Length: 121
Image 1 (cartoon, rainbow, N blue to C red):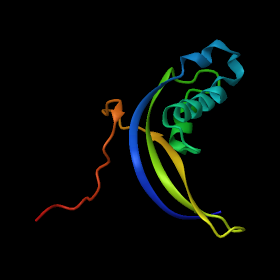
Image 2 (image 1 turned 30 degrees about the vertical axis):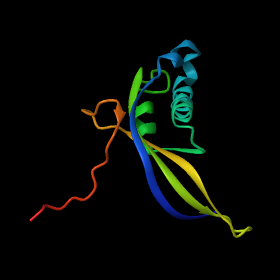
Image 3 (image 1 turned 60 degrees about the vertical axis):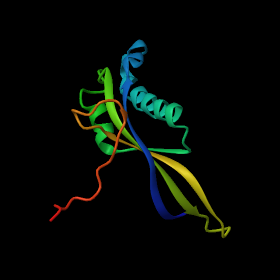
Image 4 (image 1 turned 45 degrees about the vertical axis):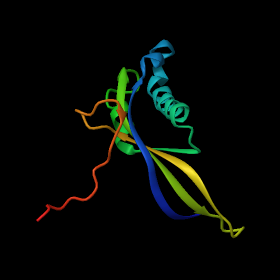
């Protein structure tokens, strides 16, 4: 599988409630919390593939395996990726969600990414 080009379709900030993982055994709560984040993003974005960034994983694991945070605010970037198959010479587009930690002051809902960065003269 060779990746060609990515194009951001939309971006959202979600607050994922992780309270539900406290109902089960305490020894694998954080494992279930990561799976819950993945399922939450899949349910709300309806994408083919989900990539959870390392910063999100570290934040969930920061308080140990038995006590994950009760909620986490994440920035979800939904991208259209053109994928080329090596065996068959066809290109197809799939939707990919990239999950990052959201900025602290950001409010839940649609999020506009700032592009550019230089000063206007």
